[in-house]
Length: 197
Ligand SMILES: [Zn+2]
Image 1 (cartoon, rainbow, N blue to C red):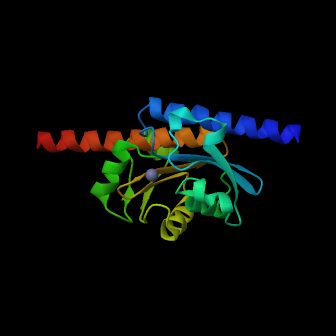
Image 2 (cartoon, rainbow, N blue to C red):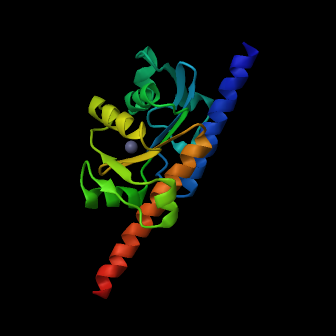
């Protein structure tokens, strides 16, 4: 029991650490986005409306991955999406953010499109970036994202934001920053190119 409580404590502390980093680096506004960590057949996820830069133990909730839970009502509205990603991929950590350039690039490319990074790091690290459709917390979004993330470490929801996966939150955070960086480079390059014509 003591070990279980300690593990839970460590998990929400990690979620809090990356929540602060996301907000500090302007990858998401404080009251948006969500973060989760998998522990065997459970996931610890931020609660609905939780400010990501103010996470404490009472701002996360543990729910089942395979089954719905009575606590789903206080969990993030994107719990259904996180759950489906854990079911269909080997991910142990998920970060959802509202990165500005990623959202803009998804709008420019269109739903169900693909963003091809222009920077060499993005090409090497991400490959192409899938854009998926679906309403917030919908089964359609859950299916589309789980499918995209079974092939890639990061994807962008059309007009909404990024989802990144990893074996740790650090992995998922790095993928989030890379998604935003590649979209920023692409946006700025294409803007500068159009002005030179
Ligand atoms: Zn969102």
